[in-house]
Image 1: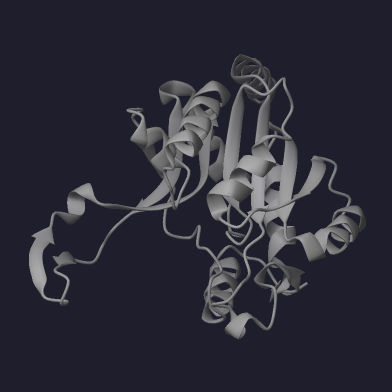
Image 2: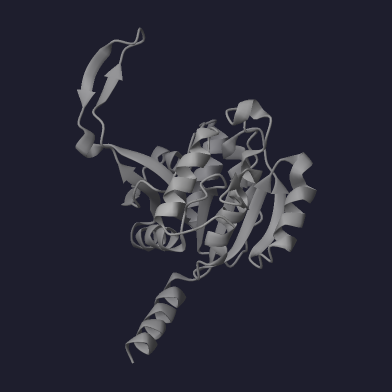
Length: 250
């Protein structure tokens, strides 16, 4: 009886949320990963490519209805084959990225469904994301309009001057490391992204667009395991985390 009730409650909740699209960014040049000699999205983590692990999480996340994959121009065919080989049903489009992360996100956003009420922007290299992390951020986005995955800072953080000397010590209780997914009400993202383009605002993450135009961004604590593969050493860390989760080599 409890299982039946849970399924009904979840269905009601998802219908309240409406259509959710995801834009997964894979158009970076991987210059910090093995000196750029290998595309980090295709690097193996316990026998699976990074991007396969990322897409599996979105494929298994019930509220996500479609995925737009943003990739480098020369990689379109490679990603198309990967999607077919792994049977990803939610990948509705594969498009080429721009010169910056911001422009790549916009290119992906232009291809999401008109039915979308929310859009999740995610780094393809953040392959330890889980359906529960995505849903946790989505819950906050529904409540507050904009939300981002994040984790608390445990180190003492200091601000420096131009010469590298400490100018002050920051209160780490009020500092978070920001991750992805970052999830927006579609209308908020549309407004902020196009206004930013008009005003020439450059953002290193999507939440900065909302911040620039006065929207409050809810930071959802999703823990420290949602790491991004940036340098080759991150593969070992990702595999350690997966071993802790009980996963074995494929």
